[in-house]
Length: 168
Image (cartoon, rainbow, N blue to C red; front, side, top):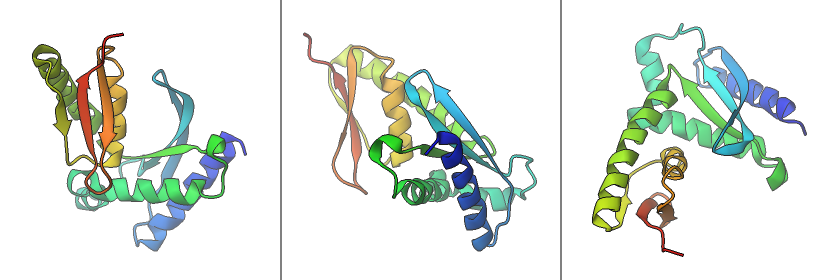
């Protein structure tokens, strides 16, 4: 299946799901490729025209993104369940710039943690982040060749351990 077809299916699935939730809202779809990840991602933007009332948008995002993360998890599960592993398309849900704002915050955290680990040599554990946040943090720490980020534990108590790479 092509990525474009999977993207269209994702857009249709999310539109229908939002209607069933009593929140009919427009959904736009776009394939994006980033330098750190060569495979394209399906970005599904809820309410691209900004017509939702702020309190409705806040409810769809949830506290610390818990609602939009859950919806994103369901989208990836539902839309990839019958696809071969090498045919998966990862979907990211965006609403009102939330993902971009969250990435900026996570980037600041990554810089601070990297500075502490590099200067002290002591590993640091990041806890209480969603799987979506941990995924972004993994990408951000890839910019530090002397550091490694390793996920540990099991959901819902999964954490990220940041440490110096063993010298080769």
